[in-house]
Image (cartoon, rainbow, N blue to C red):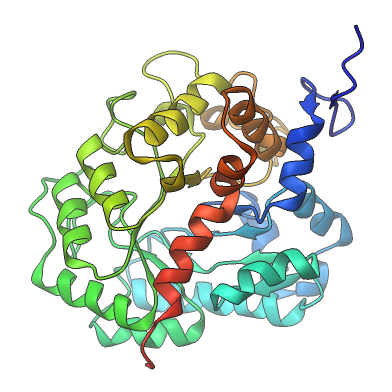
Length: 350
């Protein structure tokens, strides 16, 4: 029997994707809330220092992934976090200014849809740590430079709160000041790497939705980087959204992870708090290929999931599980769009 409703992408590599899924991705605003342009840092630094070196093939590779808006946040991991983050933002802004034909910096909620309309690559600037905020006033300063998302902690404790691999003493008084400043500025608060107590206290302290940009469910995988149900419930009650990562260590406990295991995390959040509170947070670049070996990096090997077309395969898998077109469009980007609009839309002047 010929199935005319399915066809292959990317030079016939991997299983067929339904025409319905491909069409749905094409008309959706796709936001991946932890998505790097490349894991080849030398290539990235080259693009940032000489934007003309970002080629047409590079552009087509990003656009072909199905992602419209990338959130390429990193933890700079440098002794002087303030100086390091200034350097990172300077690099991104050089690339954005040098290639306005290819990139659009996401500053407002309206910019999210502009990426789709103008067929550009949207860049949502942020960091996976907030050590660079020396005082609460630094939040407004970095907002003016283009930062729109900040994860409060990485894995360790900082002046704001505790990471998931540190003893958790919760959100500090300084952390409360930073959260309030982020609310005022219109900068999204991210608790992906925060400890459980710090996560709960942050949601309680924030007047705006709090995001979990890239994590998975501890009910399915016992790992400190995965979120327990009580944190997911509190996040959702405040209007937040949780992005699901495809990193195998957070997908399946002690065994080879597969596509269905990834889909299980989307389904768990949907059953727990509603499909409107889950989205994409891959924590990978477009294809996760090691530039030296030209093979998929081991930490990203999920059986049955080709990284370069994961948006299409995840959409197809969610449709097979019975989620409606509207629900899948929300997962692909509509849910994060709604939350970011609420976070940014009523920001006070800073």
